[in-house]
Length: 305
Image (cartoon, rainbow, N blue to C red; front, side, top):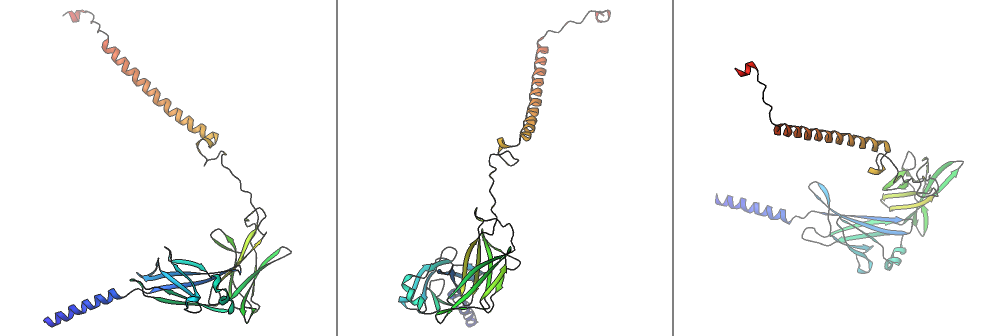
């Protein structure tokens, strides 16, 4: 019996230590971005899966390498912020390595800690670019985008690439027609009709910003390009501050509203003042009546008896 109890205790202790030694798997997400075919940068996000959901992990040290885990190919060493994110660009020292080939591999290595083990994450990308153009014939406006991949030293049309075309607005993008996503043809091209009318412009020149973008592509990562066109309609902002309105400040309210308000206030206070005056009069009359001497009753045969 004692041997069985000892065996059970040892099993429980072993399971306890095993659970404590298990560390949650650190998930590292890499993203490659190219903006206007000139700016290349990367984003890294660190997360763990806990309580059946993904949670961000901050203060994770990440070392990023280009093509090889060699010190000379170190892109950067960063620490994720409170949102588990870090953003960085490719340094100038790796310009030759970057220009040498069309395909590259980014390698992210996280340092081991008490809570997480060391992880290695890879992201393979191919150089690509996106071009945007517009067409306006007899009032029919359209937007086209071309996607090219860099192959054997030249730019080749990339087919079957999902491209989104929209107008940049505050906090997001507005699609220009019924569809937002298009797939490139054999020429690497997509064309979309611009059906928005009287869209508020960004400035007095009726300019709006068209954006063509490729998001989370397996080969090219994230590409985006912008073009400014005068297809909007500028609306002069009218400043109604200081004018009389129902939502204005007290002294800028409509005159009729001020008149009604002050009339009601004056009426209420008039009634209160009138009641106070009447109460004072009643009290004074009562005091005067108590001070005056009482008149003797007249003598009559009945009272004489």
